[in-house]
Image 1 (cartoon, rainbow, N blue to C red):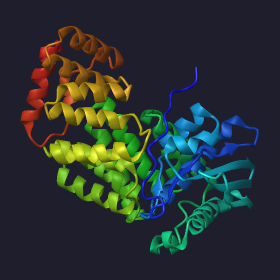
Image 2 (image 1 turned 30 degrees about the vertical axis):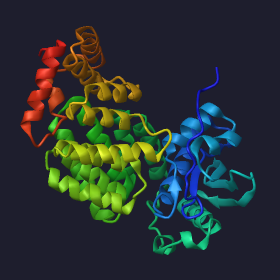
Image 3 (image 1 turned 45 degrees about the vertical axis):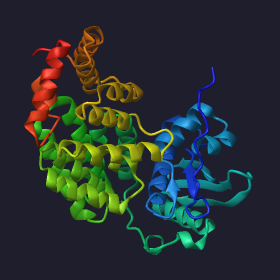
Length: 400
């Protein structure tokens, strides 16, 4: 059966703020093992475009999901609620690289701009910058601000390091942090000055902490984040990584500083907003946390699933148990963290059957899990919230 997608609500201020989505670039090189390169180039262009406050840019999560399941790009623009689409192809052979790119207007189907770049892999970042500059120029001179005219420092001069980085980021985006860490480590080994590789290695290490609860992962994550900040003090991902590590180290004020800075540097990145909402929750600012996460969820028609987990988590601690269950079910990712919160919510609602089912599922997804392990990933400023969760899980039938 065909996927059930409905058109997103179009932006109401399109003439003032162009809305755009970058579809996954097609890998036409004949080697399916190079798909990560095409996907990585797509993501990098999306990230670069999202730095412009004057634009509304759909995230990679929406564009990859829609284009992968719908297929026909003629419907994608309506489904994403955007006025412009970027489509492209890549072919990479040895050190030779061909990238073609098109900017299309969704309502009319008109081709606004197209270009083909026959370069070497050493020019990959220059090509990405040229594509971004041509897109924003084509959408109107008013879109270009000081950020557009600035010359971006090349992330790395080492193509092999960039390949390892793209492989790692692709795996990390699938929530396989443990598997991704080695790729970032290799990228850093090949180019110790590669800021983004250090930052993403930190993010992967935080992901390992979620699953293992061992503080050593956070210490290593902060080391990598600090190195990224040293190399790129104005790189949003470096501040994001530092904010994530500091949140779980319970250094919440320092975390807030870095996450707010990350938002300033990349205001359209919903992953940063999600982690900032998570921080606000642990500071006990539930109203602000809900406003932040709901803003992130409303910003993109098909946001990453983990944002629904954060939404449900906030709703649970705000004592809105029915709403929390709805949000957590929307997540559709049943790891031990989601299952524990669902069990606790059903326990508080007096539904022991459903509560017990999720307790069993939590133990299956992470055998040997204890409350001490789980609570290590909940850095509340107020210990009373941890005690509340413990009582709720006991009511659900979970005992260490």
